[in-house]
Length: 455
Image (cartoon, rainbow, N blue to C red; front, side):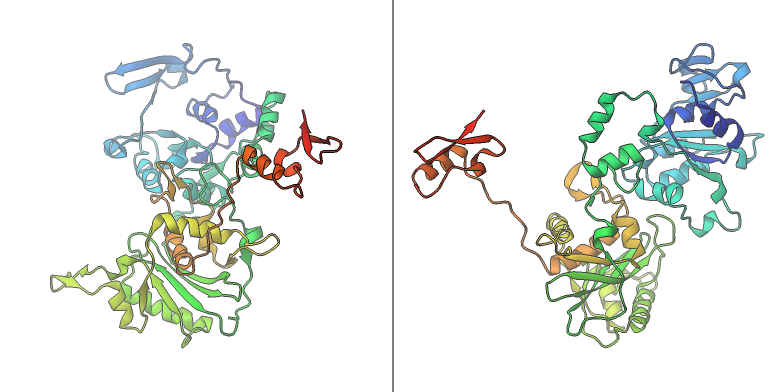
């Protein structure tokens, strides 16, 4: 490829920063830096080096000629990252980073070391599309710029991250057929491919969930007599999620506050004891003005599992027992995964045109918006979300949906056209109109009172 002046500027002048996210072609260029720029007509040109399938040290690799550094670009897969436990790399380039978890990213970074090269001069590069199990954490770091404390203290690594967006408008060689095809896509996917939006992607669990439609600003008041609920998905090494809801006269659920136990690292929990979580919940309820109010407290079934007693041996109290000691009494939520996905989606839609959706989320529930809008579906099970992603708020919020189920909307079954025609002919008062023929042009035969399609 022939890089543009802007791309060459990024490669030769501004790079590093060390953590880069951009197009896969740019990755190849960046891994072979050259001050003068170059044109690559094939994937592995002979003038640049030699492609080897069985190098005695590196296996499958591309060995660069001495004038281009003399190193080797090794081709590897991530089916089992642990096989690189003792490996050392001066630079790592990953295609489709969002197909990987944050744990894999962390492990790969630990392999960035090379004799004679300072660690802060090693490179990590990637090209990727939105979507996949890693969409949330990639978006958090490179798009939103939100980092846990270990990335900012004692050394601030945030300036080392750079995002190079790739939009359809950037390519002047796209023909009219491409743009015509792009216009046939749904609005959300069109925005992703055309504008590079990371708020929508293929495989998104809830593309209909948007701040514009489902967000509200809570005024701190609970409507008088409104039923109150809390929902809880337990976690220790993974985050836990607790939320408070009230229900209005129309049966609409309003999530007005939340408590999410994460360490600011994607999908990583606080490792808090159950007694600490319970105490914090009571503290927050006092601040929210909920102390003493009747609240139906739903929780996942794992809260009734006995835990090992590491001091005395045997089994210790369950989470539900520990919470009850502080007068927080949990009720088992409905565990059906298939049904809760349907109920959750049903609550995201308004019951009638012009109404609010049946689930509204406070704009202060930041973790709901962070994780739910980036949650992908399971690629192997279309009836469930990807449980390897950060799905804890979905599991928790679905408990409310299952506690107050809505009648699922089922489109009425349409009779075959032949049956409808016969029924209409047997009823003189009923005319065969546009309902039978869609957008056909219709004409009326004189005297018989029947409309026929004109083709």
